[in-house]
Amino acid sequence: MSNKKVSVDNLAKEITQALDDFYGATAFAMDMAVDEAASEALRSLHNAHPSGSEDYGSWDEYNSGWTVTQTKRDKAKHIKQIHNKTHYQLTHLLEKGHATVDGGRTRAFKHIAPVADQCESDLIKDLRKYI
Image 1 (cartoon, helix red, strand yellow):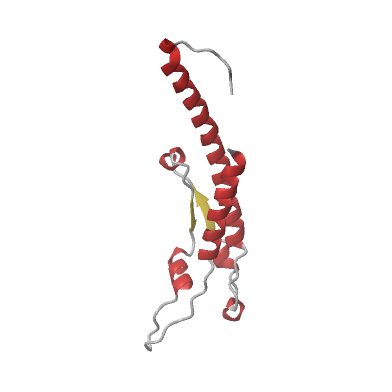
Image 2 (image 1 turned 120 degrees about the vertical axis):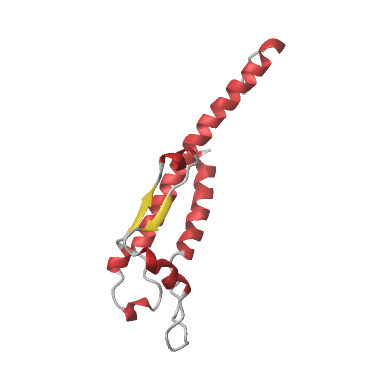
């Protein structure tokens, strides 16, 4: 904390400057934390093999489709989207299960929700670390 003396006339300008400095620091911290969390989530999804899924064949082709994208508009809001660009149709079906032709249901392979939960907690922890 600075012991700088400020006149009443310059008080608003000094407060604005301090808030701008804080915003710059927090925006940088947010960028770093979001990048780190997205990279870790992507790494986890590339290696995701839910328990028991080995019995149903290889997940290599599905797992290799995970990617991170960020639009120009999303950059201002510190948003990164993690999605499967090659097998996007399967993500919900595998995560939640689906109805079969004979009226039954397939087994759900929880592989996205655990990674999302871990990513969220890591993001909060990293934000505290960087700020």
